[in-house]
Length: 140
Image 1 (cartoon, rainbow, N blue to C red):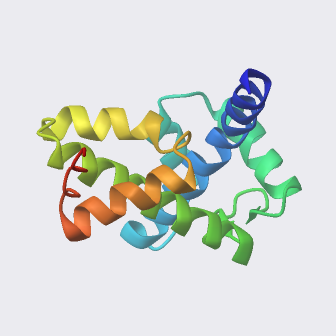
Image 2 (cartoon, rainbow, N blue to C red):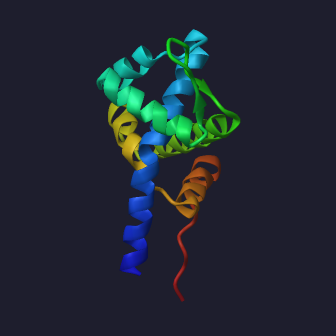
């Protein structure tokens, strides 16, 4: 069991950067009409070299298309990943707020949790948000 836990955690870590970047690219496009490398430099407080290397990996993985001096665009696969990532983020953040976590802390914590939450846990969080807390089981 422990091995599977670590395997999933390593897999989740590997996809974190891609998820964060495609979500940021989608947000920049929604807000500004385009996403430029400088937008990502500012968003993530990293160097242009870091953004360029990450964008190259995203392009290699079929999530974005771009060319020198051109905006960064999401492919269909990139848009799908950005949408799923944003939805997961929103559910986790709303759930933390329902627990009574402050808005600022929920925003920060959801950035990390969203990448590691299982579908089962995410579905349970969504259920609580939609239906309220389940009734406690009565013991006999």
